[in-house]
Length: 198
Image (cartoon, rainbow, N blue to C red; front, side):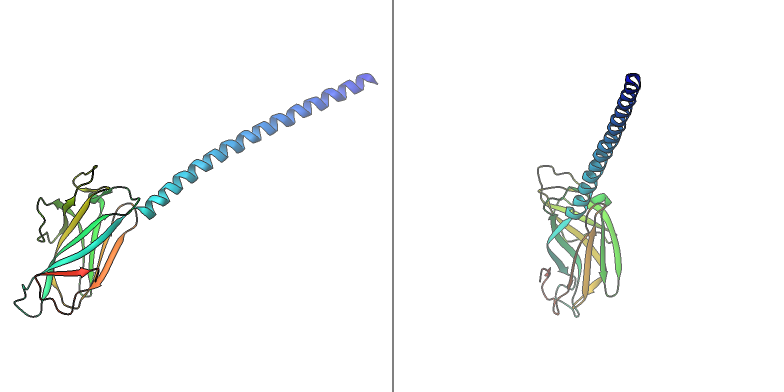
C-alpha cells in the first residue's frame, strides 16, 4: 500500500515538474514575442511621427513682374518662396525633393538644381534652385536642416497672368508634402508682386 502511494507521489511530482517546464517555455515565448512587438511598435511609431512631422513650412511667396509694368496684360515668371523646416522635422535632402507647379493651363515638375550665392529671382526653367537666407548650425548645401531659412527659386514659361490660379507643392522623399495655392492679383503693376499669404 505504501509502495503504491510512493509511486503516485513520484508520478505527481513528474507531472508537476512537466507543468512548470511547459509554463516556463510558454512564458519565455510570450516575453520574447512581447519584446519583439514592442520594438516593432516603437519603430512604426517613430516612422509615423517622422512622416507626419517632417516637411517644409512656407513663410511667403513673391514673384517678379515680367512685364515691368510696361505692357498689358501683366504677368509674373520668376518666383521666390521663403521656407523653413516644420517644428520637429528632420533635415530634408533636397536632391530627393520634387517641386510641382500647377495652373489652369499648365503643370510642371522640378527637381533641385543648384545653390545661388546671391539672392536673385532669376532661376532655371527646368529645376528649382536655392538661396540660403539663414544658415543653421548643421547647415549643408543641398539640405534643409534646423535653423536654415531658404528662398526657393524657379522660373515659369509661359508666364503666369493676372487672376490665374496657382498651386505649388513641395514633396520630400520622407514626410508630408507642403502645398500653397493662390490666385495672382487682378492687377499686377509693381515689379515685385506678393502672392501668398494674401
